[in-house]
Image 1 (cartoon, rainbow, N blue to C red):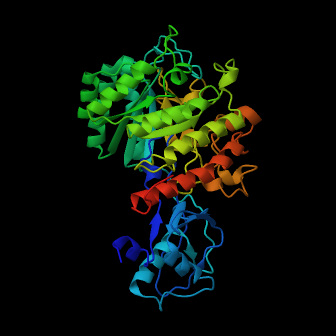
Image 2 (cartoon, rainbow, N blue to C red):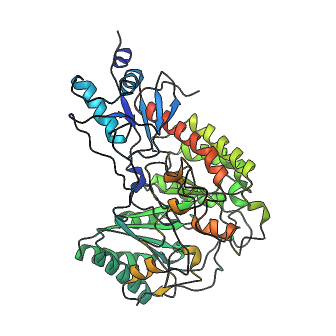
Image 3 (cartoon, rainbow, N blue to C red):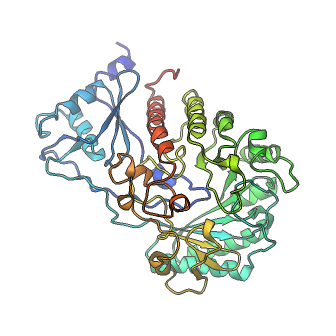
Length: 490
C-alpha cells in the first residue's frame, strides 16, 4: 500500500490559519480589529458533542469542509476517518475511550469549535482591542495621476516636517498611554513617492522613538507605483519599509481607472515598477479596486498577479463627492458578481500559497470571527497634511482633533458626530446572518452614503453573500493542495 493511500486510513484535520487576520496588509483602509472568541479549551475528561451551527461543504477525495460561524477559525477540513470520528459525537461523549491519534484529532476539533461542550454557548466577544495602533500620514495631497474614483482634491499642499514629527509623537504617545506594543505608519497621499526623502526622515524618527519606548514598528508606503526606482527600493529595504501598489487591471483595464493627469495610461509604468521591485526582492502588496468599469478585466489581472506570486487584495469602489459623475464605476451586482466569479475561476486553476480568506472579499475577512469591519474609531488615526486628525482617510475634510489634542484616542473613540463603526450585532439586516462575524456589515461609510445610517447592512450585501461560499471553497482547495491532497484542480 503506498503512503498516500495509507495516510488516508488515519483521521486528518486541516485548518485555515487565523494568523492571516493579523498579518494580511489592509492596504489603503483601516486595519482590522483583533478577533476574540469564547471557545472552551479541550479537556480529556470533559464531555463533548458536535457543534450544530456549522455548514458542510464537500471537497474532492472524500474531504469535507466545515464553515464555522462561531469558531476560532472559519474553515476546517476533515478526511473521511476524521469525519466519521466527528460524527461519533452526535451524542455527548468524553475522550476516555479514544486512542492517542483520535484524541489528538478531537483536541483539534474542540480547539476550532467543531466539538463543543453541551453546556457551552459559543459567542464572539471583544475582550481586547487591536494589538496594533495604526496611523495614516497624509504626506502630500499632490499626485501625478487622476484616478476616476479618487476622493482627494489634489491641492498643491505638503505636510511639513514639524507636523510630520508631531504626528509621530502623538501616535507613539497614544500607543504608550493605551498599552499598545505595536505601531504601524502608513505613508500616503496623493502620491507619497513624490516626497520620498521626507518619508525617510519621518520613518527614521519613528524608528528612534520606537526603539526608545520598546515598541514594534511597521511602516508601509501606499503608492500608485509610477515613480519607483532602484535607489528607492534599496533604501526602503534598508529601513524595513514595505510597499503597497495600486493596480486595477492589465493594460486598458487599469488605464481606464488610473490615468496620468495628462490622460495617458499608467499601466506600463506601474507594471515596470512591480517587475523592478520583484527583481530586487521587494515584494509589493497589490491593491485592486473593483468597479463597474474594470470588473470584466478581473480574470486578466488575477492571472497576471498569480503568475508573479504577488500578495493582493480585491477592494470595492466607494462612491464619493468627486467620483459621483462617473456613472460606469457603480457596483452593479450582476456585473460585479460575474467579474469576481470569473476571477475566482482563474485562481482555482493556479492556487497560491498564501491564504485567500482576507484578500478576495473587499472589507470582509473570512479568516476568523470579529464584530467590527475595521479599526476606525478605535485603533486608527488619520493625520492630514495640516496636522488635523480624522477617524478615516475618506473623511479628512471633517477632522475631529489635531496633533496637539490630549488623550487623542479617547477623543476618537468617544466621538459621536462622525463615522460610527458599530458592532455587526447592532446592524439591521445582519443580526441573523450566518456571515455576520466575517462580513460585519461592510464599510460603515459606504452604508451611510447609501442609507443615511451606520447600523444597517452593507449595500453590497448580495454580492458578499454570493461570493463568500466560493471564497471558502477556493481556500479549502488551496489548503488541500498545500497538504498534498489535491493532485490537480480542474
